[in-house]
Length: 437
Image (cartoon, rainbow, N blue to C red; front, side):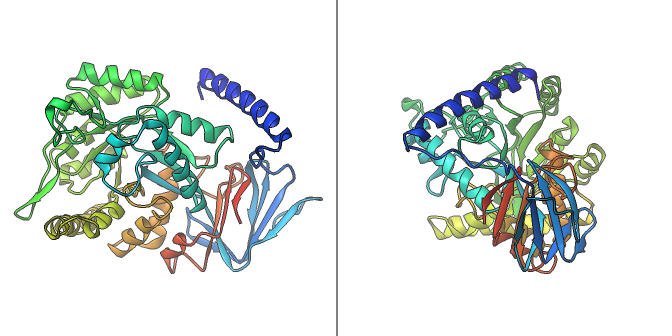
């Protein structure tokens, strides 16, 4: 972490502590729940080691402070330790959603970004973060605030200092888009000059300028719209590209200079190929990938993030039968292409695109990935191990190992037999602090 960011968070933490302390004395607010000051032993019927698929029965975890100290069938029980017997459940690492929108909620996406103020949307984002955490998502990547600019910086920082509950966050601020592109306000009266939900950049120079501005405002990575509008035409996916491979390469090189990465919204060719050639961190949606694109993704360790949950939601929640049929055809096409990608050895991470559908329900994404061809263990590995890599927290989260952050959840039954167990999380710990029990 850059020293400037450490200093910034330190200052915020000091201010928060003073603020909470004063209000607590007046009975106005309770201090945020801290990481346990005494060791905690979690005991459960099962514990899954996601990297190997080994199921430890029974399973125990010793947590000291914010990190895991020991994992096994039986661990040390230090004197004074708090022992929690969670019963007939399986202990897992916290879930990771690599594609979320905290600043969106169900309803007319375009209207909420125009009619609702940024302060109001920030309050809703706080509630969304809490819902996701309670559903077991202890780390997430927010893929654009949809017109709320750098408001996600405030939400992330408030979570980091314990002011509000929520997952660990990687944030992008607004997405980056061309004039008249995927998220531009192209259906409104031009005389009203309705703003885009993204930041305009029409050249390599403008992309770099916007990325620097967003980085100054606290972004962790850049999200770029590479294709759109995306639609099915006569059984084929029509997905115009927005940036050339050279422009995306300029963005990736600038991100590397700043110590970060680029993620793209890219539904299909040739935009997905251009993104792979540029070496982005992930291709999100990735409905169609050519053989050459897949080859480059394997070579450059680029993750595909399918986002089935949002496609399913739209297929069942459109205002007309014609729109629903169009979304259904797109989903069917996506499923068939996904099966080809599995067979070709594409590396996946799990992202739901939650926001347009209710926060806290996005574990449905894992159920759909199993339904459409992946094995439960492979989906869990994509979610936790690949998710940790994609978010830049490899070796810190995503596995139950000594030294890792104590981001731990419990689910009923055995998720290797029934992946829907991840939709019924009964216990959540993040960084050694219990968020749900």
